Length: 159
Image (cartoon, rainbow, N blue to C red; front, side, top):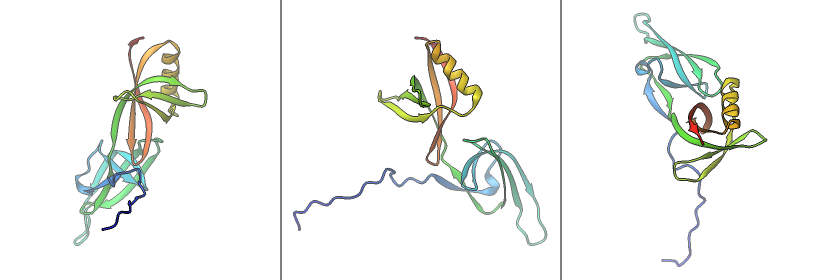
């Protein structure tokens, strides 16, 4: 036995995968799927029966949950697709900095300062106007595959 201390390089994630496999035939409308490496929400699914010995194929039309782009994919229904782990978390808005970052209050009382204001113009004006009027605002943050973005806003009354 040696008396040396061992130092290990710590990596940020705990080894949890950003996605999980799910059979293509079981993915439904309003579910999530990874298309071209992007997390997407499924808006349309159509299944086609193929010839004598072919596989039935699923045609997915989905919208990227972060940039709103429409993506399509065709997968045999017996094959596995990647499905992203999508989480929504609510934070209270504390401050908006000049460089476009927001300061948010987490459940445990610490602050989260690494999120940008959303690119959606309607949501952006709602946040800026509500904050300017001194309202208590709660923002919903959607996170998937290592990306985070503000996706909704709630007014919980005046300060």
